[in-house]
Image 1 (cartoon, rainbow, N blue to C red):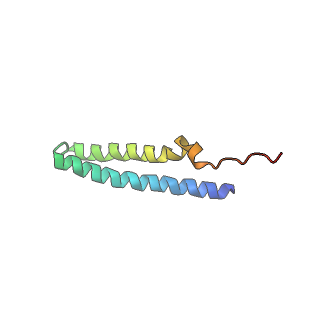
Image 2 (cartoon, rainbow, N blue to C red; image 1 turned 30 degrees about the vertical axis):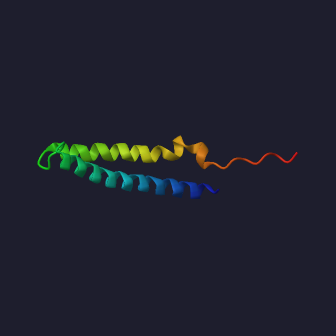
Length: 80
């Protein structure tokens, strides 16, 4: 695969990780707000959004590197 395609796929994966992080942070923080863990009028709401976003971003961003062997096709045996 050409290098430019790999670079474009990596950039796309970073954007996907950011978007998944944002959606997860909003949904997770709203669930925490409904439970009563965080308050709208407090700094805990912003802290919750930031912490959940960073954690999800790093986790999703790491998936291709952690599970690299699952994404790489097995090499066929040599014809000998």
